[in-house]
Image (tube, rainbow, N blue to C red):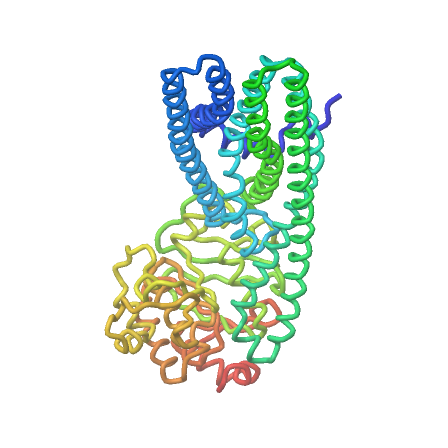
Length: 566
């Protein structure tokens, strides 16, 4: 009875098979050319042996000239076959690595997140190093076959001189590969663990870079450095372990190859001394014994690279075969739809119930910041609809019944910590280059002073994560991007916490004006934004406890006044 593991191939093996299958043509040509190269290399000592044999026998200038011409043909064949063979294989290798990088990136950019327990730094390592090492299988297989061709040609040539010499090469090769196959398995397992630890170290660095400013603010940078040092030390120790195994592997392979070459040379020398083979055959045998070390070395290293490629493919499979967090429906919300939250229970939310009509501007004053963050996560579909109780409806349709693409098109949630990308102000505001309301969004978000400050205007360069912008400028840039998207429903989470009171007042007024007639929800404690809203909902302990205009709540609700008054 077969086990489930044998009934279904492993995902990493599937990835390797896919890579081999779609590069079959390039690999065939590469194998032929590299096989021709190895055959030419093998033919060189054979030709030398024949030249010596005929030179001693005939002593003819014509035969010598013909021999020199033959050597020239062999050298030319070796040079051209290597050049074009490696060109074909390396082109296929780099192309295949590019394909897998794009596949991994595509998985990370899917509207529906995948259920992968990996951080962004780990995914980055998989998309770069693991993709490259997986694609190396395109070169490994042709080089393995061509090395086998060289060994077989050498064995046949030596066998024609004396059967025992040919058998010695074949038996020695089998013994070497059998010994090295055991070590290659250790290398594969060790490499997979090393790649995982290096990826975790990369993820830790990415996290530290993101939180560098807050860490400096409260003096946590030293503790963070110690944490990274621990992770990096683990990766270093694993890399040293793998290097030791690689060293043992390389040393063993070199020693065994040298032993085989010495055995062939000594055996041929003894046979020549005993008169069993001629001087020409001895020259050929000695030349082949020296030459055979290169293909044997290459041949013996291939199992190691196969195991490394397999380990990398297994890590890529963690991303490529991961199931989606949720299965969205096919529905499409109607334009200008309303937003309804019906008895949602998630995190700090306790059977939250509210409704925002189409075209309404509503502010939600959350007394607990965690509740605002949980609500933003639910509306952004960062939490799968099946992961919380209750339902969220857009235009009367449940969120679970809508496609993620449709939700993103009609409902945009702009987080309080919106990412800023390397590029320009314009590409950060309008990444797709399709928005028609960039000027209005810039003006509404009060980003006009940043644009006017630089000669390039909207084409002013922005560094990674907005490193050359202040906190307030980054926040206004993120707000401009949200406004330029011009979606039917816009949810803003604390969009003005990093700006001064005067700018905040102007932004509140501009946002209300720009978004007039479209549904807008602002999660905020800003008096300016609360006052600009058509009505304010008070979110306390996960439920709506009060509802009115900002000014009426200030006049009648002491708790509200204490929470939002500045």
